[in-house]
Image 1 (tube, protein in one colour):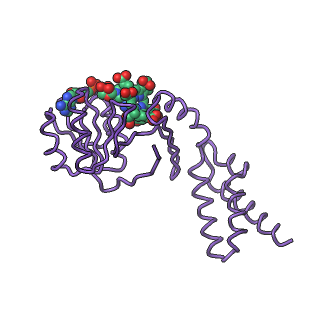
Image 2 (cartoon, rainbow, N blue to C red; image 1 turned 90 degrees about the vertical axis):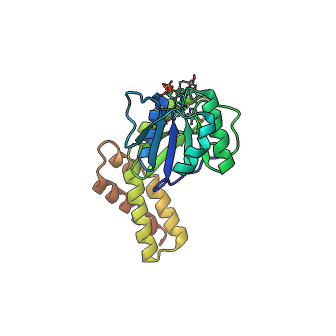
Length: 218
Ligand SMILES: C[C@@]1(CC(=O)O)c2cc3[nH]c(cc4nc(cc5[nH]c(cc(n2)[C@H]1CCC(=O)O)[C@@](C)(CC(=O)O)[C@@H]5CCC(=O)O)C(CC(=O)O)=C4CCC(=O)O)c(CCC(=O)O)c3CC(=O)O
Ligand SMILES: NC(=O)C1=CN([C@@H]2O[C@H](COP(=O)(O)OP(=O)(O)OC[C@H]3O[C@@H](n4cnc5c(N)ncnc54)[C@H](O)[C@@H]3O)[C@@H](O)[C@H]2O)C=CC1
């Protein structure tokens, strides 16, 4: 399996199953997509800004639901194996991405897994075990939280400096060297950790950039 980052802005994600798992997937996708959850009942859980449709479709009805919603992604998260299988096969026929929450191995073409993620501003780190062990993904995600803390402000600041150096017309080779040094700078990262002081991050990163550029003149 190969990780890609998908922009769901303005897209529909259709979720079958309103249990704890359907809620977790719905909450995740509702941060960006318009999410519709179809289920006869809904768990007492956070579904984010999802819309609810109370229904229990049969496998034969799945095609009509997909045609009506025209989703970019469909999630099969019911506890009904036949329904989940129908969702996967109809989605595949129609070329729609499908996430089957009740299967790990034996994935079919067009199927996707939802990784564990750590988000910090524009930075997202995603972990997958290719379906082998979701509990390991969850554990690694928790371990990575402290590593990723502050990455959002570092990425924003270093991204801005990159734009400024491009505008200044700095030689590309030296620009890359300076930007790599700022991205790896311990002082930059320590200023970004915790509450994250963007001003300090920016000063530290700018100092490192200028040091590298000055060094190149010698
Ligand atoms: C294939 C995949 C399909 C998909 O859903 O996309 C899938 C499938 C299954 N999960 C199962 C169980 C559990 N899933 C979790 C947790 C998460 N599961 C997630 C993703 C995925 N789960 C995809 C692969 C991801 C990868 O590649 O690693 C995470 C990462 C993302 C998310 O869901 O948001 C989220 C952690 C989020 C976080 O914490 O950051 C826990 C842990 C817990 O709940 O504490 C358990 C119990 C412990 C265990 O069993 O490991 C079962 C068995 C059900 C049963 O026993 O009946 C199946 C089906 C099967 O195995 O057949
Ligand atoms: N991917 C993951 O991370 C995990 C996946 N699972 C798998 O996902 C499945 C769902 O897990 P839970 O949410 O805990 O189960 P659950 O039993 O709490 O929820 C299932 C939901 O599906 C609904 N449903 C049943 N038939 C339906 C139909 N025809 N159309 C629409 N909705 C229908 C039920 O009413 C219920 O709301 C489990 O069967 C399990 O195999 C379980 C744990 C984690």
